[in-house]
Image (tube, rainbow, N blue to C red; front, side, top):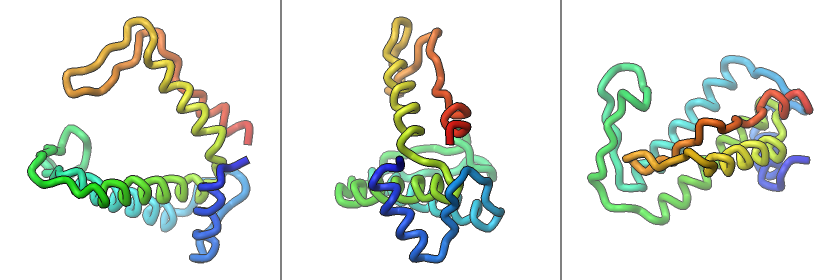
Length: 146
């Protein structure tokens, strides 16, 4: 059963005339491009609200090609709005692919909590690194159960 958030996003998408399949599908290129643009737009707006600018080192956008520069003041309202909007566009992407969010999010959350096992550590930049025996989420299992 999808979360209430998923159901609200699905209603929005239906009102906007977007496809909301009831089974797992791969949408057409137009839909995939829309979802990619929405995700990137909201992510960049949120990064800016965090007081960080992003500069590209290359033509292709990758984490390695970006330079993150904390050079602005933080916009707290913008951070909150951006995080909420990111949730809407990413859940909307799951809706567009016909993927129920509740089981998927539970699987990923449980895998993330397993990252605190023996051998895990905090990387220099603050990212928590998983232990050597970490078991990734069973995404394929979740998709197949739908």
